[in-house]
Image (cartoon, rainbow, N blue to C red):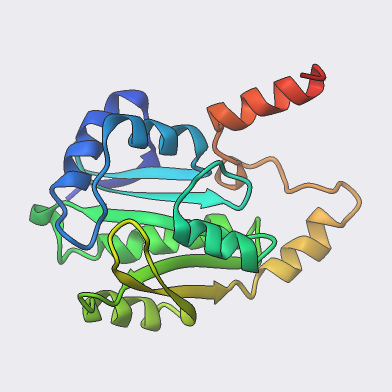
Length: 205
């Protein structure tokens, strides 16, 4: 089995949308516009390819994203800096191969060089014990609960403190250069909406 984790490309979006909407009740459905909004705003949006086929994806956002999810907004109200895992999907034929842990290792590697907290939520109605156990063994703790206004389902809000971030912050972000080394795996994903906002701000718009 040949596995690769890579940044999503525009031509992948149809496959990502189909995977998302076939995932079942633990993943909220998306339409084309919703997925395009996540593509524009996500700081982390990667797909897993197995033998050339898209087997899954993970989408995560920084605290400055323009995103109206009530769970994302809860974290924004409580944490100044974080990476929020909005959704992870693994296609049914590829479940049980450990792709979820591969994705979480990869997104953690990204997050711990940029922010102090990694955040997500898990449904409590119906209770998703598989996901709760997965996140608990990955080091997440429940930091709150709320009911989603769109569907009335209760969620547990989970966060994981990234113990490596203080070293990164003090050594590099607050160090002589004020930035991370220029290595491909440390780079930020280019977010179209963030780039447009920066251009407007520079132009005084």
